[in-house]
Length: 254
Image (tube, rainbow, N blue to C red; front, side):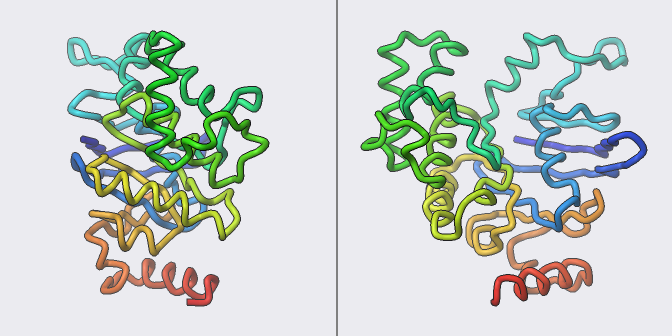
């Protein structure tokens, strides 16, 4: 589903991603873990071309993302081409980014009308079905201000799912939530994983990574230090990963 080869990304003089190569297989879950500032979120944003990368390739379903190649030359993809590529990809951010003046069902239905050309009736039907999928059908008429953080994030997930993406990207979707609300969002994500949704997830939730991921990539200072099955969280001989996990466990009293 996703193939990343020799990816480089800079912000000014700072190289945020350095020679990153990674794959995410169809119907599998790839979790990106690592300390803050390690390049995880930037890597995720490059997959959706929300960040332009300087060198290397990002391909989704075999198609180069963000660029077009002609006669051995590469140039930026047109806006129409990029919009077409992004229709395959749903993304959920740390912040919920809901429209405060719209109800839950309005937040989910509006992109279907504006982007996919659905009628209002079709969009509402699809939106209600997806809200039911994330356990929020009863909150369809509620405004974001009347929803908990966990409920708002589930609406954001529903909004992405309504577009029927082939790939879902999650950028630390529980980091803005109170600890008591984290579980309800992770439950929805686990359900998506069990249904075969291809997912790339940036997370600090090691329990979720251990239980839901098919593959885990540990990043540090813009490089992939180790990548493998979830048992690397228990069996790794990589000193930097072991140090990271020890710090995580100490902070979370594990």
